[in-house]
Image 1 (cartoon, one colour):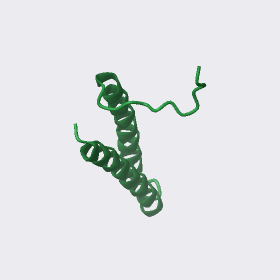
Image 2 (image 1 turned 180 degrees about the horizontal axis):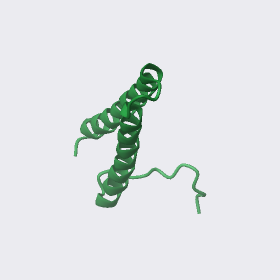
Image 3 (image 1 turned 135 degrees about the vertical axis):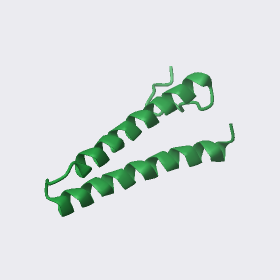
Image 4 (image 1 turned 90 degrees about the vertical axis):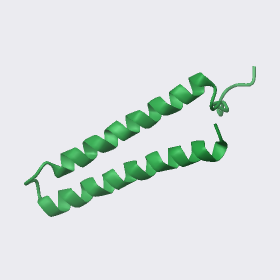
Length: 75
């Protein structure tokens, strides 16, 4: 898998997460608790965050990416 494609997928996930976070804030301010749009936007954000974490773990397991080990003791 191409490095730029990996970066694009991760950045796209992060952009969608931020979009849903902003939508949740907007709906919270506009609707004032009268609809479930805030809950739906924040639920999508959580699902995307979990999906991104699982995607990164899968990519590491499949060998598509490697964790670089920041904070590990060189032993």
